[in-house]
Image (cartoon, rainbow, N blue to C red):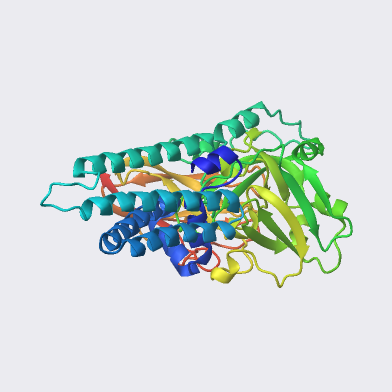
Length: 483
């Protein structure tokens, strides 16, 4: 951690090992981790790596107490595993990895020798071999404290404060095509319903980055290449200087369960994707845009998507401010109508035009090659499952990016479908709030919602899993009404 922080721009061996785990485990294991832990999967992985390291350290220590060479070999092997992880990680330099490996092995072997000198000392004479139990505990404790301080110092030096200061100083250009102000009635103002624009701090985050990349925009470049006539690179300043657009776009994760929270709407600002591709000149064989992030993640989608008027963009701003680091600063992709696993690349580094035979990160792990967002609706209110009898609002959000929402209906206790009132529409890429005024009677009730999109497709009732291409089904809640 400390060497990574001192060097800047690289990640620690803990992250390298974690990235190796993420890249090598089967897709079913990754899906299971997301299902069980949700957005806490990454912190849990880091804690697990530390705990496994401590457990292996205990095993090595027990082995070394019997034979020093075995313990020393274990320490060296452990360091070598970290170096091997660094060799395959895009954000970890091999030089500090080797340095850390050598230093860790040296400290470990030194502590082992001190311990074994005490363990082999003649008990009858009272000799301690130069280190009694209390002395050894002091030495071990000092080592643990020193290592902990080094780790904390490395985190503080990792560039987060510097990148945050740079981000705060950025002045966004006025978009050449600003989004229109939200019409009156686009937000129904009902307590408990997700707001029209989800605040950046509350917007969901799902990606493969174990730690949030801290990218200095002065060092960042966006490369456009592959099957193009005129490959080029852009600096961040050059990207800011290009004509921008604004668009209200709802993004959804393919792992979002029916009624889940891995969906959000924001106002995005950036450069239209088709402008960059037109500058590069796409060759006939470039039928897929393969995107790559600074940490090596890849995602691909058909090139035609960039030219079909859906306002796909390389975004630099979110809800009126530069992208937060956790949402892709300095630049990311926003592609309406596609799940994030095939399109929403954060910390964008490259756009390569390739053929459709190539696959992004998630496709070999069991997810569908194509990822169109399915028509969905969700009940936010009543948030509490117990309400008072009388007129009660049943309300929530519905989304079908690129198609829009035409109708939302509510069903109580399996009765007839009743049409809900929709908020004013902003555009086909933005979700809509809805509300149904329910005359709640005492007892237990089941409330169900379904949506119809702008193409006339009704949300299907059959429940399916999120894999391989997104969940389907009606969101249902159980409500108890007290007199």
